[in-house]
Image (cartoon, rainbow, N blue to C red; front, side):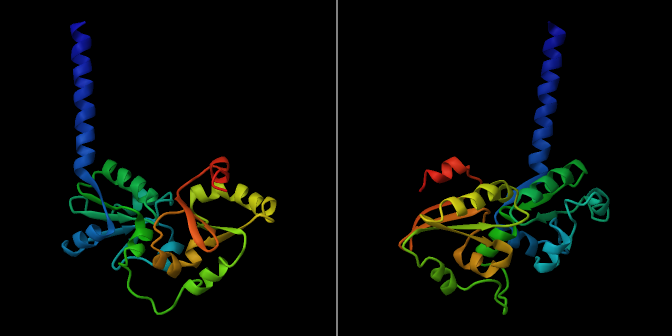
Length: 231
């Protein structure tokens, strides 16, 4: 019995120590604080863990692309100094969180993860102004709402896992409910300017309008059953 108690105490101590180490090594902060910490860090190591295609379309200044989805992710991190802070971000936060956990396992001592990813960074107005508009204008968006039917706007992305789960039933609903409501799906990557202006920082985001007035809004996954309750 005494040996069992000692073993249990050692296990609790080990788990507590591991948890404490993880919390000490990694922290999650909002985009504004993320930007300030980068500015205060000489020669900051900034990792954009999205795909090369996403990185090419836009990325933070001085960030380097280390694709989390690549089988070479671990090997590609070997050139970075583990004793210095490393800043990590992705599109919306999921991949950067997984990457941060892996970096902690690899021995990086200070990992700073940006909450909400580049979507939230943009919605906070931190991106540099772009002379070229990407996607539809606010007026064109308003025109989409000109209907005597209810209008459901779905902001999604091809890379977004919850969006992929919702796509089949949304496409089915477009056909089944066509006489009662209009469902419009807008690709977030093709409408970056509009997302920034509307301060949409999470995907998917659904907005339900009636007579051009916003009646309901939801971000994140929602089942077909729960969505239909809003109609």
